[in-house]
Image 1 (cartoon, rainbow, N blue to C red):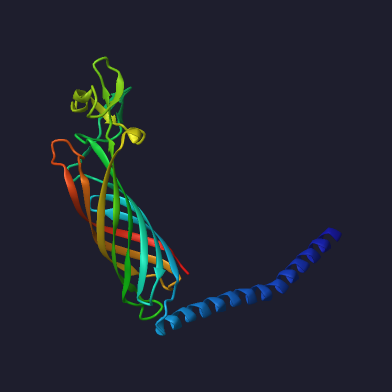
Image 2: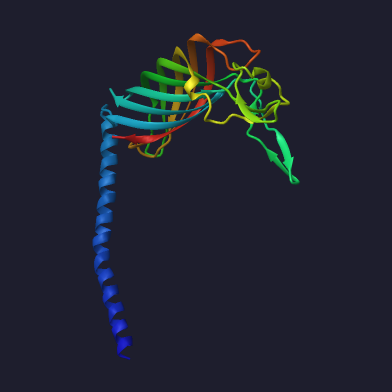
Length: 273
């Protein structure tokens, strides 16, 4: 009986303690909400008075190009309420329109196995590291806190191209597995589809890359749909042009190229302050 009374008293004290803490916790929560509202109202007031609502923005992007994919990072610094200078760095992998991935099937013990997918006739994997600077111009601002801001983007700069030799895994005349590229003593095996059993993977050719310098420029429209201006949540679509001072050879028996033109869509996320 004493134990039951002791447990009951402990529960009562615990509930009383929680009840005493709840008002304080509610006050802190309400203070945070009030501070957030005041900050938002201050940002809106600055925009109405013609002052930038942010000094700096940082945004990361994931890109889907018509000829590949990419990642980006952007630093923006406001100049006026409608204009900001932006600096970007991008990494892209560019695909050739004639690329077709193939898998080789083999059987053992009644099971079917597929090797690493490979692209027949691919000579080089082409990467770009782009450094650029430009302008972000506000075309249409948020009519209210639930609206969408529309920006025009224009940037240009240096494009550093890198060609990594493409390897495939083959079965040689001695029935042994080996990795070969096109410019090698075993280039005949590289071009024999009956000898290829799979792709070379991501570990081959990094120490054999060739450098191709170039220039690039892009223009785009960005839709920032985040509720408030303290966070970047945007979709960007645009067109990108690149010119390299060296011939880029991606696929065998296809013309080399120096000029590339593509369209892209990018999802961006980040912060402003």
